[in-house]
Every structure is written in structure tokens, then in C-alpha cells.
Length: 92
Length: 92
Picture 1 (tube, rainbow over the protein chains, first blue to last red):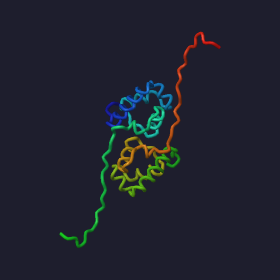
Picture 2 (cartoon, chains in turn red, blue; picture 1 turned 30 degrees about the vertical axis):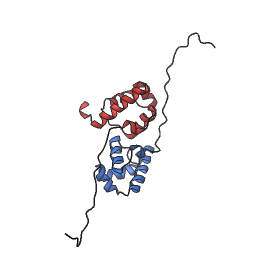
Picture 3 (cartoon, rainbow over the protein chains, first blue to last red; picture 1 turned 45 degrees about the vertical axis):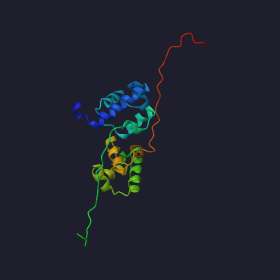
Picture 4 (cartoon, rainbow over the protein chains, first blue to last red; picture 1 turned 180 degrees about the vertical axis):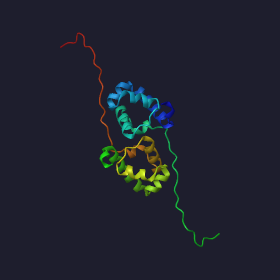
């Protein structure tokens, strides 16, 4: 269902396809090395699924790279937390 | 459901709890920074859920670390693929 494509899945898929091709592996070969179904490699490369970390780790190990490489250019801007506090007698 | 705890979820949870405490954040504060529900931080730290990569990326960014740190000590031994080929006239 292409409607469900998230930017995260799309970027992961781009990274995966690029690195797989650079390594010279077919989707089928990568599927065997990572113990995934070959259709899952296709789904991931097309950005149709956001994988769990275990899937990302399997793919990274099979490709001989660190997991970070697969999530390259996916960034999160964290929020911030600041507790409120009384300010008694503070000068104005 | 503790029955579903996988070794991957357990190790991820250990890594997450250790790094969060080192950073001096409560589960609640981390939840705000990562835009996750605070109960999810608890589930993850107890190893009751294998997160998707987007969750791991949010947590890593909120903690100021690389995603690799959260998957430390989770390893995959890739299989191997070797195509068969004819060997015509090969010496015995």
C-alpha cells in the first residue's frame, strides 16, 4: 500500500538499495544472508515498510556495515524538558 | 506479556536504561524529548517490545547518541551465498 509510505521508510529504502548495489548483491542473495524473505527486501527498498531494529541489524551485518549507515539522513529533532520552579523574592 | 520477551528486546532495553540513567533523565523527560508515551519507555526498558527504527532514532537523538549505541551487543551472524557453477574439464 503505497499510501502508507513514510519519509522514514523511503529514506531507509534508499540507503538500503544504494548500499546493496554497491556491495554487488542481488535482493535474493541479501535475503539469504539476512534470513529475510526476498519480498521483504523489495518492500523495504520501495519504502513501504519501516523495519524493526532486528531487521535493520540483520541487513547491516549481512552488508558488512554499521546499522547507522542504514538510517543515514533520518534525523529527529528532540524536544526539550524544563521543570518549572518557584522564584521567591526574585528581583524584578 | 513477558512471554514475548526476545533477547533483542532485552538487550535494547538494557542499553536504553543504562544510557538514560547516565544522562540523568527520567523516563518521563525522555518520553517528552522523544515524543513517545512514557509507558512505551518502560515497555522498551523491560525488554517487552522490539522497537522500529524510527523509535530507536528518536530515542538516540533525544539522548544525544548515535543509534548504534542503543543496539550495542546485538549481533547477527550473516549467512553466505555461493552460486553453483559448472567445472568442465577440471583436473581431478
